[in-house]
Image (cartoon, rainbow, N blue to C red; front, side, top):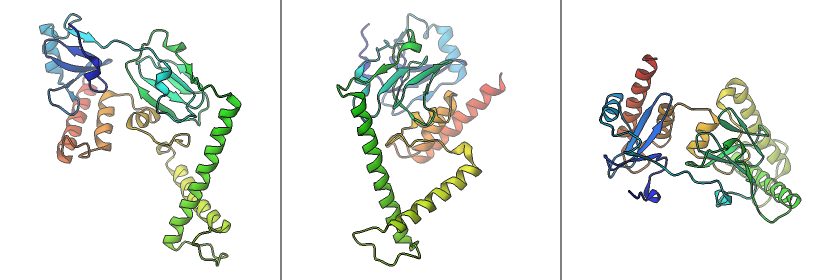
Length: 278
């Protein structure tokens, strides 16, 4: 039986022949999500249903076709900013890109520089010898030139952020007492400095009070839900499912807010059942 995996929804790990549906499996403990026909998201199946499928042989190796593993190639860098120069695969088959080198520890990848954020770039990759899967981006540009490009981009970004901070402060009337010139086309140095100092003070105070809620993402332009889960080390599939729905409740166009919240509650209840049964 030939399966067109290009039609598989994101995250699919298997195709079930008896059901004619895509499956997503997780282990320790064993759980199964199913992408129902005409569905817009994964649905976590109950333990009773999974046990029934197992008893019927629906989840046997003959009926459950595993998704072919893809090799990690230079194509993984397509669409990523030029500063992302390294990529690798974890034991789970998920791939991540980073500005600096990645180091394998246990079953995960960590940035060699702890301050560099890691970006999720896909899953379903070949995990054979995953500890040595690290590849470097081929740009044809000398490393010294690449460093200059990164430094210049960071410099421009810092200036843009300073200007934006000053404009926000201008609207709120939070202006430096020593500065009297109007800010129309030129932003005063002291004015920008005041905005930066205020922003840093608030951030430092919040980080000091609640450090566990803060993660350094200064090395990326944008971040997706998978990177958030990775940064906060959310590894339980049920919790991952809850966070994903909570971040976009009612905003995905498939289900309304009430439906998403109800499914969050259902998944949380299932998690409690699983933890209680340990």
